[in-house]
Image (cartoon, rainbow, N blue to C red; front, side, top):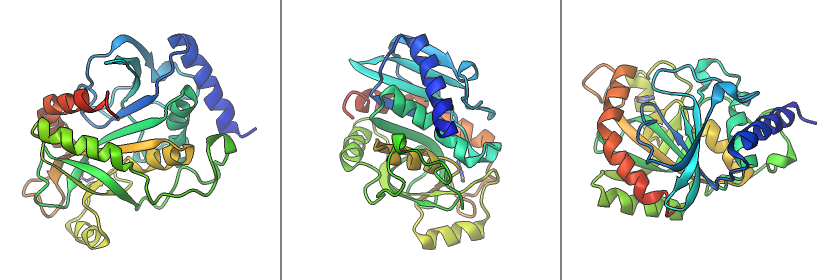
Length: 274
Ligand code: HPA
């Protein structure tokens, strides 16, 4: 048996014991500073990452490490409050563990939110880029040497990885809560540094709308498992060389704090509909 499958089965068994076999059909991953914008869940059960056997640990400020299970307007949901990044030193392959765990718990749809820098001057801080595609510039992939048919086929299509109907629901809801939103392409880098202006100019010619240090590993694993995916990129800054100010993680967190309220309202509208 593939060693990751054995590990994930243990994590799933532990979680099922804690939640008495709660089976969420939708999962939400909250990005930097967005962990507080989760709508209040009924019958909430908290499972700390640190207690789950084989699960990774979050090390970044702004990312707490909990799985929240609960019901929102009749919908059974799990929230990953805090995510894992390649730049933290986790082997790329290990970034598959949490998503594959969600899949074995019963999740069918995944909403991924993340803080990003924007290459589009019209997508200013506080806007959302609803992802319609991505470019993997991390020069790595969590699925390498990590194949198990339980988690889907080795070779799989990515031409429609961000589900159109979920994007449409989200764009309409953004209008309702007065969030500026536009579809675009996520450009994934490893970090942990922010980019140079020359890199941003290069990424723009390659087709990037926003740039960030997460999302893509999770989305690749989810797509292989056959999950429908919605990507919500919350713009915290204009990208390097376009922004006037110096970029910092403190600024990322400060900007997400500003959008927190509106982002919660957005989630309140879309979570029951997705
Ligand atoms: N670049 C990469 N990741 C980010 C940025 C950025 O400008 N802002 C927030 N996350």
